[in-house]
Length: 143
Ligand SMILES: [Zn+2]
Image 1 (cartoon, rainbow, N blue to C red):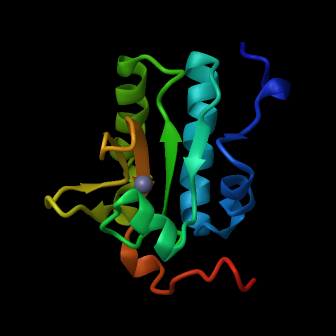
Image 2 (image 1 turned 60 degrees about the vertical axis):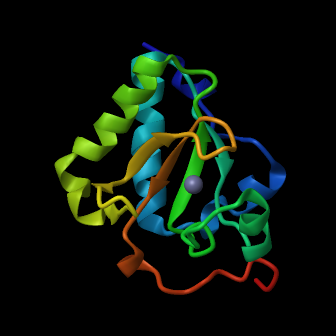
């Protein structure tokens, strides 16, 4: 049994932590599920590397989608996991029946929530939900 009282969400930066609760509640719920799954199965904490971003932050990263600006996705680091563990976590979320309705459609035509990739900013898992859930850009400088 893992030490539950020691489990905590970890963040790459203060900025990313401060914006965690600006994310869509459905995404926070799904992430919480995954966080506890990783804790229970591997006794490891997921480290969140990005949550809500601004247009200029996205431009600096070369992002093509504005879904981080809408609070519809987050990224987490795979550094403290083995590849097979990452794939297990990704499959756990993508295959869960309760979450099928929240999947987003990728540019390549795949419906999913979790995606393990490297878009040039280092390997990480991107987790997103469907755009229909939130149309507005979140103005992080005006809350
Ligand atoms: Zn992302």
